[in-house]
Image (tube, rainbow, N blue to C red; front, side, top):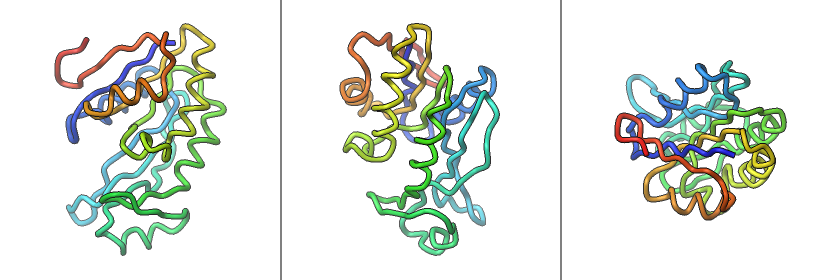
Length: 172
């Protein structure tokens, strides 16, 4: 299995890079997209991809100081974590959809929530072993620089071929 970690700080272009990759390479997975209301950033929507085709945007994680927008989001159970409220329904839908995801697969993004065993952690613990059975499979995960080593230790097999990709910067 080939793993590419799309590494960058907030607003560095990780999600844009992954979205472009997903369409060009007919990838499956999940992508986060910024959500604005009246020009103000309130959080992110999630969009599932299947074979490079994007699905509908779903409210995913919104700043906790935007309770009106979170309440208006309707479906899903929301929980607070740090400065965001998360729609747990997105994690469930991604888990269900992942059963049919074929390589290449994108996951945007793994953060502190996953490092604590929540969020996409369960998806990764099921998806990675399945993809690892095929040495030609590709998995691309966006992550901030300070979490890349923890992601490798926690979720990736020791023999995984890992490449670091820095959108807009040097690639290793």
